[in-house]
Image 1 (cartoon, rainbow, N blue to C red):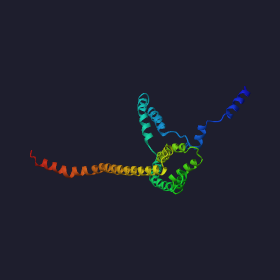
Image 2: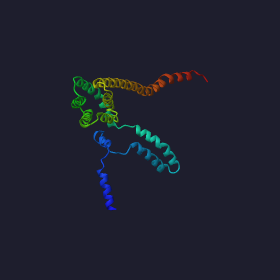
Image 3: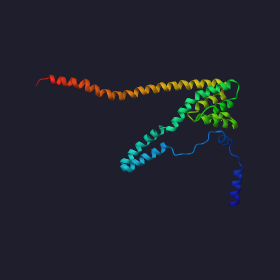
Image 4: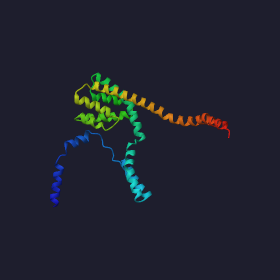
Length: 232
């Protein structure tokens, strides 16, 4: 039995692993540490808390009803660090793409253009581009690397642009220039939306401040004068 187990182990070790698995291990995005999902923790914790506080069966019923609500609410939340990082990358990205277009138009390869842009860009975008350059330098298929970037919402436009150029054969500089213009338009649209939201949000506090004053100064004296004019 021992000899058979050792023989099976030796055969298993001698069989090479899948080429796709090795390719993903080398060229795909590094896996992040597996941390508990806050949305899942909230979906589990809310029913337990309701059951402990309210007891059976009302606590169980309320907890089951609030579990999906807690999951959806916490899942939509974004950490302050993540929001700040994405905002910084969004502000840096159009200028970096313009720099890459200028480098590509003088005849430099895409990897070299990306490396020069990474050296001239500060963090957080500079470090992300440096990692991409390192992976592209050893990658057998650049499309695999660019496809792995699509999971990052901040760097997804870069991955889509380079993957589109690799798959379609279009000039990379033309594709990158179009993406930079599109990002600028989207940023201007977001700024207009934010300015409109500020106007809407300030209307409610102003109304809360002015309506009592209008009532006390305009309506109350009129009502008091009308009551005084009545004779009983």
